[in-house]
Image 1 (cartoon, one colour):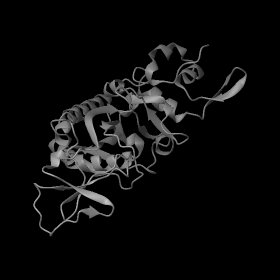
Image 2: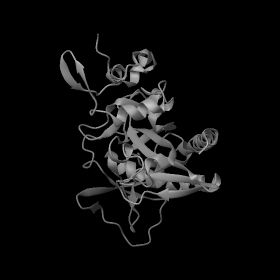
Image 3: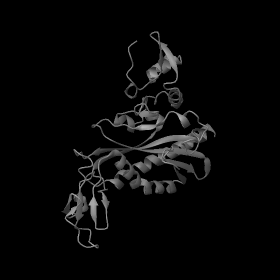
Image 4: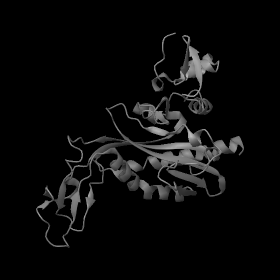
Length: 306
């Protein structure tokens, strides 16, 4: 695809996503910034609050905004393709209806604030499809068929409980009419609490921030989770929202090359052979120490003194 056309398509997709994301907060939160989801409901109109477990919250959030994503695709003339399998990248593929070669990868990334300033998540594998970019193993289309890779980030705060699963509650809401007979005072060992309105139930999460970012622009130079082959994001919330990652001034090519070679390329340092796992060593290895000043230090490992 012609470079200028590619950049035009990328800009249009990014602009459309930003416009869309600006509307999401109003759809998922109340005026006092509580999540509009209060729990699960049964036929007796019992409301079962959910736990603050991140996997549960993330999945329900994805389900909550999915109808809006469908509306987004239709509004801006994209075909939407869901990942065929749970472990496939990306979560969503958007294809321009007027050009099947214009494919965009979008991952939904949800995470909670560790404090008022930091959050973080993984950005997908740096092995497999990331290295073999013409293959389709564990990816909807080969990596090199996508002209842009994006994250829709959702950051929230937890309403903390000492025991995440143990503190789930059961409510009856007077504004919901009964149709299936009397409700017992207890469900299992849980007391049933009666409230007048749904909004009286405290949501498990609140205070949402939504943002859109190109994956490479919010990447750090560290793995995201232990020894697994996942790229880690930067941690500062403002940097995430402003796409101010370790590679954001270096460029996508350096992001690609670094992560393809992460922990594979080696160099001799202080007389010892060392695997390269930080961007400073990688630039030295490539003979490009002149680019070190372009590394955004807040998104990279701390540089060791020479």
